Image 1 (tube, rainbow, N blue to C red):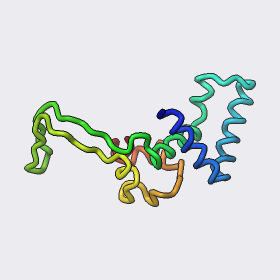
Image 2: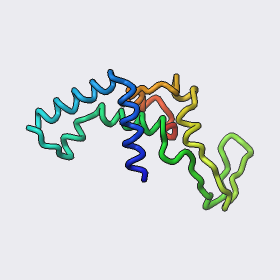
Image 3: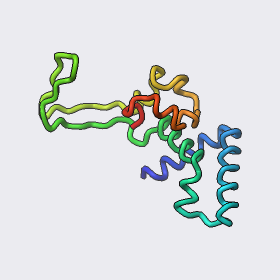
Image 4: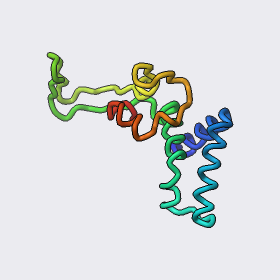
Length: 129
């Protein structure tokens, strides 16, 4: 099941990195202190570091390592003479994209700061699937 897989990898990465674990713990503690222990949707939205940790876990350990798509129409790739014909199957290597050092410096390093708004803005929108 995808949810338990994501949770398992996230907990695994936190177990390896006490600094990340402590920063996340502090964020959760501070938010819950403000809400008097009530865990609401709004409280979770305030946990921006939690969102970064989950995103980085998914980058390093994508639940679906590749995607397969079928084209629904002919498509000419701009600035090339390549045409993807209708009905063609496309293989999208999610794991390879997420571990490409040209997109993510030190791709094997767990770094939630890759998912700050500024860092996200600098990347191609399809660099994280």
